[in-house]
Structure formats: C-alpha cells, structure tokens
Figure 1 (cartoon, rainbow, N blue to C red):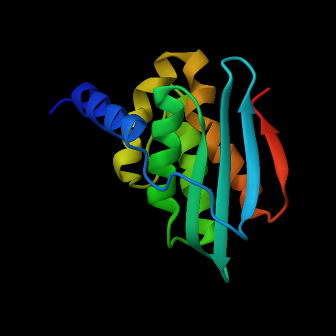
Figure 2: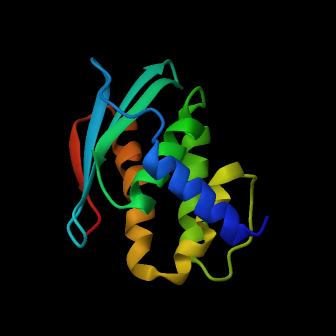
Figure 3: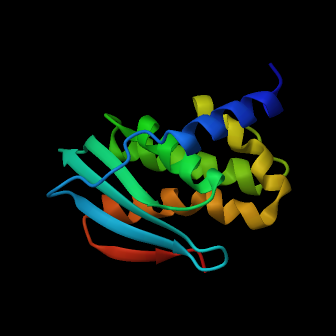
Length: 146
C-alpha cells in the first residue's frame, strides 16, 4: 500500500468514525479554533500524575482536522506528558519542514506527511495538537491558529 493510499484510508476512517469523541467530565479542557476555515475542537484530558489517563475531543472540522484529533487521542492515551509533547513537536516538524528527518517513530501519524504540500491545511492538522498542549497545562484556554 502506498503512503497516499494509507493516507486516504486512515484519514477517511478517522474522520468518519473518530475515536475518543465526546466530553469527559471533570477534566482539564482547552478549546481550539481555526478562523481561516472554521474548524473548532475541544480537548479534554484527565491525568494520573504525569500520565494521560483519559483523553477525548469534540468539535466540528474538516476531515484532516477530525482525523488528526482522533489519531492524537489514540496516541496520547496512557503516555506521559513529556512523551506527548515530544510527539507533538515531531508531528509539527513533520508537516511544516520540507527537509524533515524523522527523530522518532510516530506510527500512523506519519500519514499526515503529505499535509505539508498544502500549507493551508497545516493548521487543520495541528489545531488539536496545539489545543492538547494547552489542556495539559490544566488551564481552560482558547487556542487560535492565528
């Protein structure tokens, strides 16, 4: 299977059937918004010490935004805050730098490599990740991609 075929399969699957979709009560929360296209995402996180015990999201957005949030929640569950931050930084580098060289294995998240070819879609793919970083701080914030 080519990367393009995998991209299409994974993105479509996660956008049509997002994982960890919904609100978690009594969780840290941050809200993200992309004013360019109207994508909105709320990320909810419950920690157990420095580890993500529960994570979910809800919102409205394009297929890339929804799939990215869904895959992000799958990845982040049961990881340490530091592991989540490292992968978030790796993800950001992967989709924004043409000369990207992998520093770690990011699994299915690699399907988003092609997003860097479409600069207007980068913010769609990173919205949930920026919002997660805010939620991990334990403060209710509104994150904008602008």
